[in-house]
Image 1 (cartoon, rainbow over the protein chains, first blue to last red):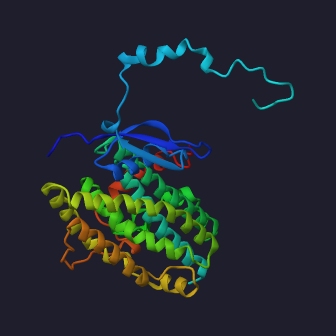
Image 2 (cartoon, rainbow over the protein chains, first blue to last red; image 1 turned 90 degrees about the vertical axis):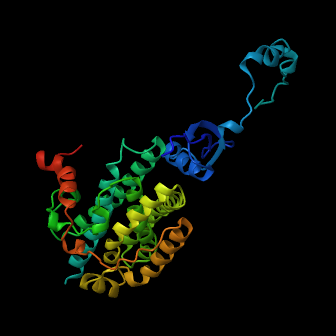
Image 3 (spheres, rainbow over the protein chains, first blue to last red; image 1 turned 45 degrees about the vertical axis):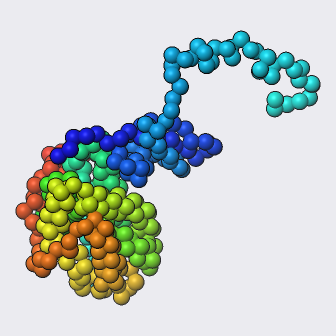
Length: 95
Length: 252
């Protein structure tokens, strides 16, 4: 009998009141259909969702944590990118 | 027979099918081949036990005798259980478990579809709720039949073996007696001879995709509806009834 492990899948669930799918975890399955079924059983038993996405973990390209300095730090010193320099006129709500 | 008594008996049959299969499946809890499948089988077991709860509560409310739903579920003797022989068969291995599940689900889906049209509103409501669960059960067990039948040489051989063994308990699913006839006349029960075509079609479609041969053995074992069970039933009940026997009336 083969002892090879099934591929890993990342699971994304859209909740009833949420607009976008959120990453909830991962699981193993032989293929995409089984991954959907398993995700249903593992991650939606308590009515957490109305839609499921799965994708093989190996298909995800991730940023390298070692590049974090170069990728993200330059944004820290550019406060002018945040819209915080406007005076909100009186009487405007919901800003 | 008085209609209420016939309905009571009918509810016990349906409830026992769900309860005993739920108990069997729950034996996999913590022993599944993979975590995800362990959870899937436990979920299905809980669905089935939930169906049994609804059916026994309805049976108890008819006032035919004074037994509560819990008493109906847990303190009857073996010969008083009315479940199909199929559902009490041992888990044996994963393939055997899935074959048993598939043969049952393929029956239960068209059965609940028809029962949701019952003239008895309470029964129709239970059927409608159970149907949603059963559709998923059937999808789950059908896909596994195909995977195992069309998988490796070993998985194919073992699922074929399981199907061959369990085939002897399939004829009983469609047996009907006076209670069925009486309730069919009243528009309450489902005519199983009509359901049979759907079952056969589903079984043949999945077997053909899975490369599983239809068993040729014609020998059939029956008797579950009359309380004549196979040798596995007593052991199952001993485990299932232990708490209620040791601590009568206990609740948790």
